[in-house]
Amino acid sequence: MREATDHQTTATALACARDLHDRMRRYPTLFPDPPLGPDTATRVAQAIAWGAPWCTPAQLRAPARTALWIFAVDWLIDHQATGAEQVRALVDGCLRVADGHPPHDALGAMLAELRADLAGHDALPVWREELRRMLTAMEREWAWVAGHAPTWRQYLDNADNFGSTWVNVTHWIVTGDDATREHLDVLRRASRLVQQALRLYNDLATIGRDRSWSDLNALMLGLDETAARRHIDDLIARRDRCLEPLRTACPRQITYLRRQIEYSAAFYGDGRDYWGTLDDESVSDR
Image 1 (cartoon, rainbow, N blue to C red):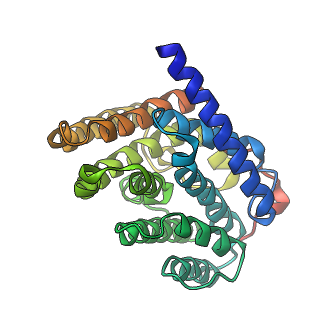
Image 2 (cartoon, helix red, strand yellow; image 1 turned 135 degrees about the vertical axis):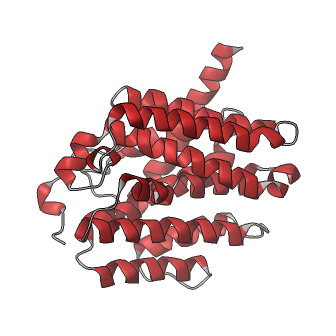
């Protein structure tokens, strides 16, 4: 049974990767290679498929595309924007598209497609709110890098910029049952704890890249590796307490959040990364 599940997950990941590669070809300006080449899409697809091995490629299309879009907007804000006004305009433009206004650029066009995938779902306002939280957190981090660095606690509290909760909400909107939708607020709270843990796993693995790219990292803000791993353990324990009341109502969603932690612990523990190498000439001066 385990081998059959692994085979199915691999097949699902391949199907998701093909779709993401197609998105990259459709929007080439959003995914410059390097650092956002085909390997990025393949790794995203693998993570999405492993997190929900019971889902079909069709069910995972929306969350996988959502995860890929995050890399595009992160690239534009972190490494292409040259001023706060440009970042603010980008954020405002995305939120207008999320409200149903027509897009005016490739980033907005791809976002409009993501929104269309969720058309007719009652939880679309929740999706829009999570998008707003993510973009606001990205804008806040841009300001920190351009100005005064935060404390590591402030940085971790800003983990909405990681985007995994927005992806999770997309996943739950598309695949969730009535119980999932009923308990979406609790699942979102648990997802934020997972998101902070993923942020720390990422930082532990990418400290070298973050230094060379002039990005922020918890280990550059006063948190050492031992404390970071201890904090991850605490976040996982808090996640479990948060989800305890949902054991009967939402067992699959609890498994989904646990698998996210397991996958990221292994992925980042092996020193892997979703990004490719960076061309110094492609980075803007702030």
